[in-house]
Length: 285
Ligand code: NAP
Image 1 (spheres, rainbow, N blue to C red):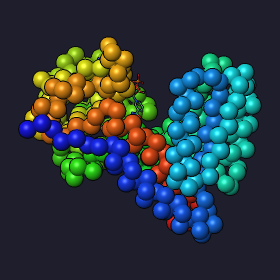
Image 2: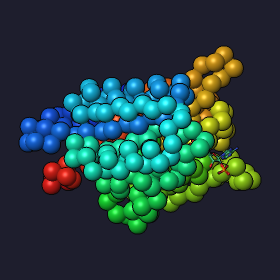
Image 3: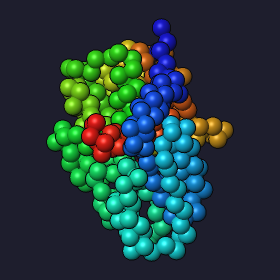
Image 4: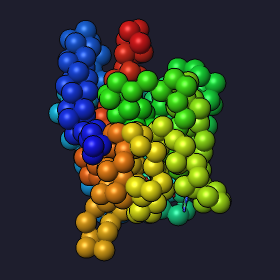
């Protein structure tokens, strides 16, 4: 039987509708959730990403601020801007769109964002909170993957999850979230000699590599849950993930498509984190 589809667009819609309701309620009580998005430079993809984030804020009834700066902005100027936003009571989340121009140190910038407003969950403190099982902001993409798995009703307790990829923004936090959900977790990377050996034993596979056809049907255990984080292009220029959808969907129990799987969930969880931040400020978190 072919795998059931985990529809990220549908789940995203449901979660965003709940977020909009909670935001309206909070606004009525005097705290309107607010997100500031900073874009430095002219990267065309970044312009699209920030536009989508600001639109999502608008649709959810959030206050949003989009600050666009020339690529010549200095690191000191950017840090000063972040400092002002850290102290702005109308702003509950700050996001600096990556990549930054080469003369600006992204680590310095991320660490300059107040942990209370680090809704991307990228700072060292947020990462530490996640590792310690404390209540920090979870990075949006892995947080969205967890919601997608939850939406199937699949119980992760005692299951074997394999994460392919170990980046600080996706693979590592994904592994920690799966661990928190009591899965037994294996993390694979470019130095893993026999990837298929690991994935064939997995009840859940999360692929976050950035290389198409990394996971094919012969590498998957029958009935497994497969989450595809990758964003790639095939030979025809069509968007595709890391997973060979055709062959894997013949074997897996559940699978996310690309597009329409993890992608829409990332912005949704950014809204969720911003709302949570505003609720904390209002004393409801
Ligand atoms: P990244 O920083 O480049 O990390 C890729 C990871 O894959 C690295 O840990 C790398 O291992 C590992 N890897 C590379 N080749 C491998 C192989 N042959 N076998 C096993 N592991 C291998 O990328 P990222 O930021 O985590 O993103 C991963 C993918 O997800 C990209 O396609 C990105 O565009 C996509 N993404 C999507 C969303 C979304 O919203 N849908 C959000 C974020 C990212 P090493 O550590 O050993 O180099």
